Length: 319
Ligand SMILES: Cc1cc2nc3c(=O)[nH]c(=O)nc-3n(C[C@H](O)[C@H](O)[C@H](O)COP(=O)(O)OP(=O)(O)OC[C@H]3O[C@@H](n4cnc5c(N)ncnc54)[C@H](O)[C@@H]3O)c2cc1C
Image 1 (cartoon, rainbow, N blue to C red):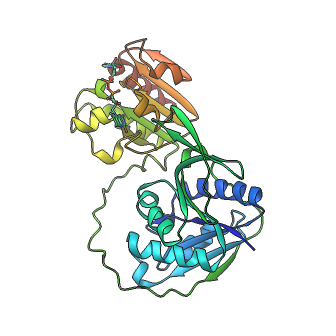
Image 2 (cartoon, protein in one colour; image 1 turned 90 degrees about the vertical axis):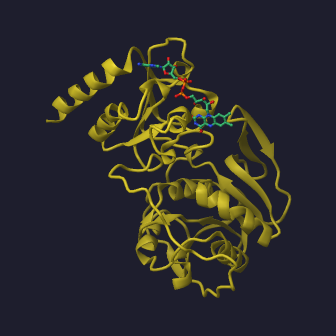
């Protein structure tokens, strides 16, 4: 039977949320292609992640578990994914378009001699749709090779919900090749707050926040919700916050339940990373700012007045 195969992403023993979006894409694609859905899980000591994964309706979870795969390297993971795709008759191999997906999927495509589409936002069973020019144009593409490889824009697909029953897990024998690259060290930014891509609330500050110290008011509001802090490229380039908080075309793509955009104009490059958020609240003192065109709620005001007031009210409400 032909299969649509999703490559799962995980970190520190936890499944990444974007995998659930990729599963939604995979389920729909499998139905359109009359194929089975399976998920590849690559790493070491991954049975906990497999346990999390097996309730989303995939027919199979294929585990490639080996000490040599404990730390991600594009070379080894792409090799393993390509071998698995061949073994399990994949006609379509997909992964969320994050840092890892962008790094390894082109290699998977080369190994499978497959055509590749990136940042896919739709599939009708024959043609794929992808955003161009920061999502301002949509291109329809056809991948003509028998096996197709894609990265998908996670925010374009809802997160898969658990369904009744459990997937069958199967261990795949792994034989690692002599790699030309090796893992040396991982330097993680440690933060008490969730990553913007994982959070249900993101509070983002732009150039209007006007300084690193002032970001404390953004952080305070984020902490009330247990949410994440985001930033525009202008705020990152000014050195006020680390670049892993950048939202947008060249930053992270997010689609939280609530996105608060404070002191940012709403450039097309910024919108590309957040316009799929469920509820957008914009705070800007310029009523002409483009962010108001996509906001569900707009507050034309000084953020230094509104955000502390908001935080105070919410803190009172909570206590
Ligand atoms: C190839 C490319 C890729 C890019 N990728 C990204 C990306 O991934 N993410 C991204 O964000 N940008 C990206 N950019 C940059 C983008 O074009 C904009 O320059 C940037 O988003 C502007 O950031 P900003 O909205 O914070 O600043 P501005 O556009 O300067 O807006 C600041 C806003 O703050 C408001 N303001 C000021 N003071 C206050 C106050 N006290 N209270 C309320 N409002 C106030 C102002 O009215 C103004 O609207 C990219 C650009 C290029 C060319």
